[in-house]
Amino acid sequence: MATPMSADSFLDLLTGEGLTVVEVGGWRTHNRDSKGRWGPVDGVMIHHTATEGTAATVALCRDGSADLPGPRCHGVIAKDGRVHLVGYGRANHAGAGDGDVLRAVIAEKRLPPDNETDTDGNAHFYGFECENLGDGRDPWPEVQLEAIEKAAAALCRHHGWSARSVIGHLEWQPGKTDPRGFTMREMRESVADRLK
Image 1 (cartoon, rainbow, N blue to C red):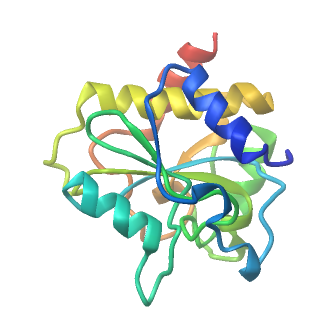
Image 2 (cartoon, one colour):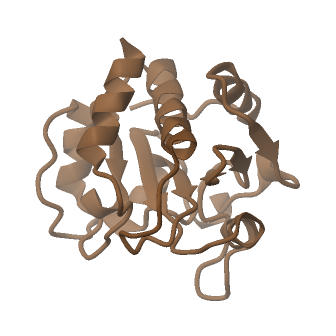
């Protein structure tokens, strides 16, 4: 468990990892903190957006919709590898998920099956939405996968977490399929290699 870093530290961490960052509007104070707490943070959650087109994807993740207001993540990782920062603080990305999974993330142990929705994930995870249709056919460019790896590794290094603190939405909430098109096992292996 860790205290979330400041927005400026978050930005410095990502750029320090070699990522190209795009700051969107007043992202530092755009959040859902009025709806509940954010922190302590325990890990990093990866999603796919089920959208196409970077501009439309970033706008949706920043502003949300009537049924799910924004921000819907902290950063949008585009197909070109750029990270668009759209919010900081509590974000509508994780939703309710499995408390047993959270306990495994905290303990950095193997994840159990996600079979309940008894825990508020928005309070506990940094979230990255990654531009992809999520149909299993839309490609994941190498530069995008590397950006996901770098962003996750930067946060893990800062907080002293291992790669086991990086999970996919599909490992948190029953019925979710994201990210689809690569496996979280492979991503954790890449993050672990970067942390060495």
